Image 1 (cartoon, helix red, strand yellow):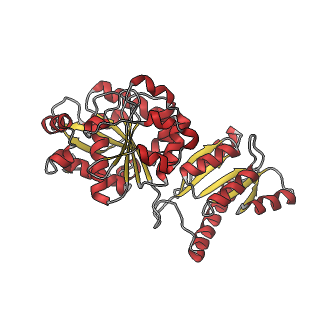
Image 2: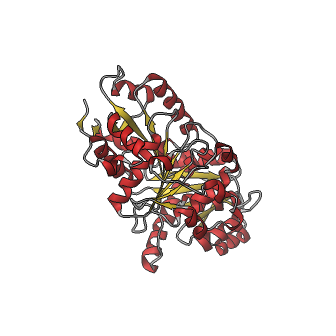
Image 3: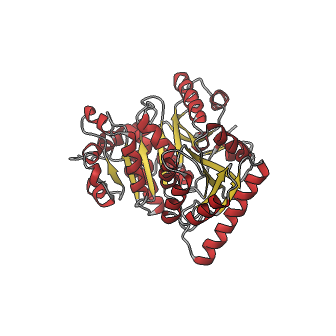
Length: 405
């Protein structure tokens, strides 16, 4: 069953926490984000594409009614439910005139809130069907473009190798438009792995921010022979500082309007640019290898992502999987408190040779086990499966090459 994706907009932290807690008790709800004012809400609607927005009336910077009006015009398929302590009929009229689908008065109970969300969501679905409104939610004919971030907490865990081969395999599997974004802004290697020599990069593109649009971005993308488009990292490390998080969020918003899959390679460190990308991502592929320092760092990473309410997007990928390293799969899962969703076998000869030639191994050696593993990872991405909840419900995990003991 598709979940109802909800964005909460309220300047009161305590209220947002209460609403999130109420919604978390219901299986069919998913809170995709929070906004602290109307302006923040409008930006996050564009980036997260929720089904329902729970909108406070009185907020700083931009009020709820003004934000509702903008959302209703730009995204008529997204339902807004206003929340307010006020019961004045004038506010109710203004809210409905702005495009709000319902109005609930604070304080409300768990049942009042959840019943309102269900009722309005169902009504909105029926309206879309009746009037032919195109929905952008996952699971409908219009499939929400997928932003997939490949991340790891240290170098050498296979982030770039996985991102590059995953992008190419996804294009082969789906025939859809795929773009590969190198956000390892100081030392990105995507261009090297794909044997392209960029003359311009994201650093030059950011300097044209005032006139940035989809057509301009296309002129900066390099088309690989596989059909994947590439936006390379800056050519020199010192240029990384001119690419800020707000720019990356705008860039991803535009790319999502043109591409079906945006795959992001990342550095092994947290910073504002990465956190913004993770927040916008639909899926986070967290890479690990079977050594204690990496497992320790991945555990810390998972804890941080939980505090940011991003852990529901995580899919754990074990790279260079082997039973000869002294740490078992069960040991790693117990330490991490999460199940490993996919495994990529150790095949140094194939992987290193492909990197040195600049020909990704899914192209140069499609019959290799490591290529088959990437194909399975791509399948979980395209089918949007392999989350922790699904793995836990299976009781025992089925790996890429048969059931795991």
